[in-house]
Length: 157
Length: 157
DNA sequence: TATTGTTATACTCTATAACTATA
DNA sequence: TATAGTTATAGAGTATAACAATA
Image 1 (cartoon, rainbow over the protein chains, first blue to last red):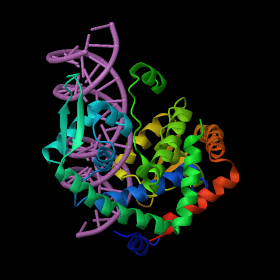
Image 2: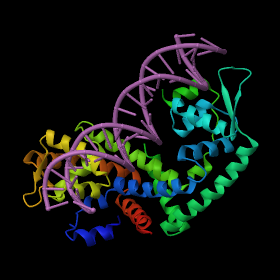
Image 3: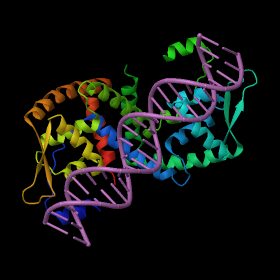
Image 4: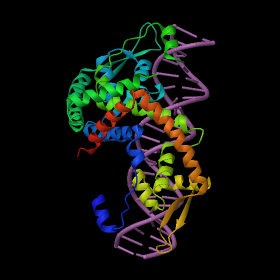
């Protein structure tokens, strides 16, 4: 199944010209992001966490009491699609919906005690993941250079 | 619908703590990639091209006569999912399947005359898109720095 | 009337299994 | 047996419309 095997087997492998895509910002960004995603998904598979679940728990931990709408907006997720994430976190006992007394349409989210402990474990795994990505980049100096470039790009109009 | 309007309307906007995500390589890479994708999709919407269609035409143009399997592999697409793209390009008169005479299982792909002209137009639009991305980064020097970092990251194990 | 949370639904992208025709 | 192209299908992720409860 490896490409090495394929080359040995077929023997008629063609050198493919990728030159333009090789120098395209968007294409290389996409490949790099896919690589990080793959490591992320592998890292959190044992904890049964997808990227959106991770970000949700992290935001809840740093910003207790946000409304559902605020959380969804902050995460760039549609309110409708956030419902399943909230249900899952609640059913696992990691987060709770608290109905507002003053405006009964509103629900504010809080981590449970178990949720806090879970986030602590989760962040340990995340730090290892991040360390692998920084190492792949070449080190903290390169990480900083990359973040400067990406932030400038994101800040522009 | 803009966030400005929302702030004015609700008045109770909360400052959300994003500090960890702000410094996470994967998160910033994802945001940057989404920004490039959004510009890409907008750029090629009038030509009715999705990212995979663009890459397919580009590879066909630079590597005439590739087998379907080689194209799919080079693009990182499942063979099964490549069929619809090939059908679409053929129905639009941009590409053609040529059945091999020596091995009748194999089809090699070639752009038509119309396809060649279309790719020329497509690449003009792409160069404008790329120029916008490079400008957002700060210029060609920053683009080069970014590509060096991304390539190192992709080369690592 | 407008907003919050919710349900239902649809569309894209991606992945897998299985078929056919060839080798 | 194995491979190339194909079909069918299922699972994510994401987007929109519409509803009930509430303001």
